[in-house]
Length: 240
Image 1: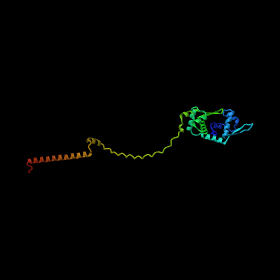
Image 2: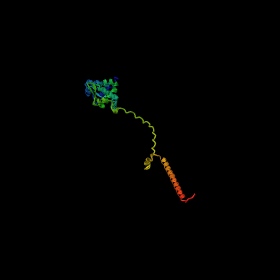
Image 3: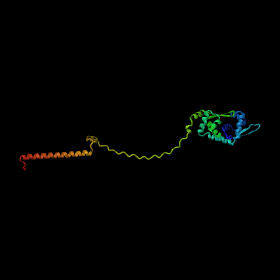
Image 4: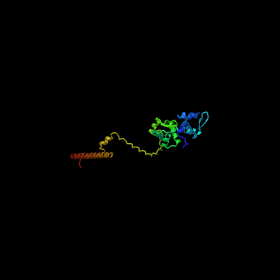
């Protein structure tokens, strides 16, 4: 993987602008001419740049198609959603690691993959990097430090797949309550007066009472008739 681009290569490549010459590249990355030339030599060996020596003039740096493709890929991935690998890198930075090589060894990522994630974190303002004297240091921002402590953001946690609604059993409709007919006025009082007897019992007692009165009336009539007969017989009006 020695020929694979790393984060220093990507960071240096992103500093190259049109018409930039070799002689001024060192100042562009806060490094000496010697350190800048070493980095340019590495980029050229990896096929990311090329330059033409125009002695005694200055040599213009040009980004190759391979270099342009690397920059495009990094730009496309820089807008991706924050993921668990990004969090692991932030936590390594929080632990004090500042070199991309130390971070790569800790999270066990390929140099190019690590470069893509570090570039994304810098573009999304979770981290910043600085090249000085040919050395690249990475540091957390306030946003990155807070995220390293909080863990995965809620927006990055995948929501569970919606489950299909279970078929609910059809519940049988409850039978309609029977209509109760309100008793006529006075029925309740009558029921209380009758001692709680049923209508049949009341009717039976009424009939019995009528029959008893009829019998008593018949007895009275018979007694009266007998008395009248006795009186008339005593006077001699009636003879047997």
